Length: 171
Image (tube, helix red, strand yellow):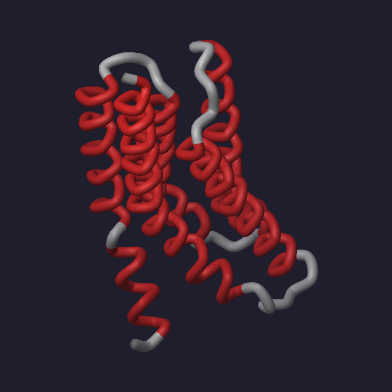
């Protein structure tokens, strides 16, 4: 498979990924039934993904203009949303007195990776005028966005399985 085709496939999945996050948020509400790290994480991830997905057309129009400020709006907005998502993840955990699960840690790490890639690519492209990490930006961001959903789901199911078996062993 060519990289350009892979890039197209990854970016075309963004709306489906949002639907998936929203679906698993609803599923988590029904299964968890009370405040939990998983519920907090799926809420924050679905919210952040929805905001980013809805802002893409506007940001794309702005970034098409000439000038570094317009390019900064593109990269800076996504970076800001990623950092805000990390803040919200851990703020809600503290506020609701929830332990941070592996699901939340992985989501936080993914947001940190996404923000870091945005910053590094912007600095490299517009300060150093090079394109060394272009493939990481071009394929890494959509790959992280697409891979995060099944990874969070697997971690959640693994966590539920482990808790269920620990509870059965206690009796």
